[in-house]
Length: 227
Image (spheres, one colour):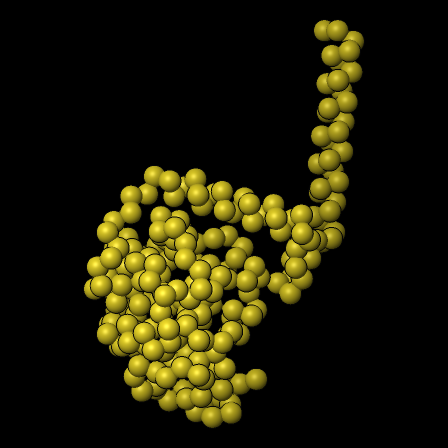
């Protein structure tokens, strides 16, 4: 082996060892702040966002999107969205909630943003690491997820009244699940039902105060959610 080649290999090995040691010390001493109230630096955020978007795009390429225009499909999706997603991703005329304000990265407002169906399906089914987005594929089957995707395609075009009407027509939080039964069937149930504040029974967080409910809310457990 030529001396120059040996020198290059030795230098590369030293740099790799030094980089590994530096990263190990960086991690060991907790230098990076993982608090959700401390934003990433712009370069780190851009890198993570690009990696996330490309990861979803690549994995969604082979997904075959079914027909999503069926009104019945969208109505079914509306009930589950209202119960499972609106707390984070909001609804037309709905103010920010405690969850949507507290999560970082901030969840997209799906009443104002429309995603490509295949990518939306993949994200709902598999979730997204370190974002607070659950893998709903563990409790919903593919057909139920597609129902929600169909609803999401229409959601940005709905106003508050149209949203409430679709939720009222639905079976509420109702899905068979991926191998496990789950059917609550509370028609038009608001995602805030059962989350009482000490200020008064049945009072909802500010996010839904301006929205009429499709059905009468159940009284919230007294002082269950007090702050």
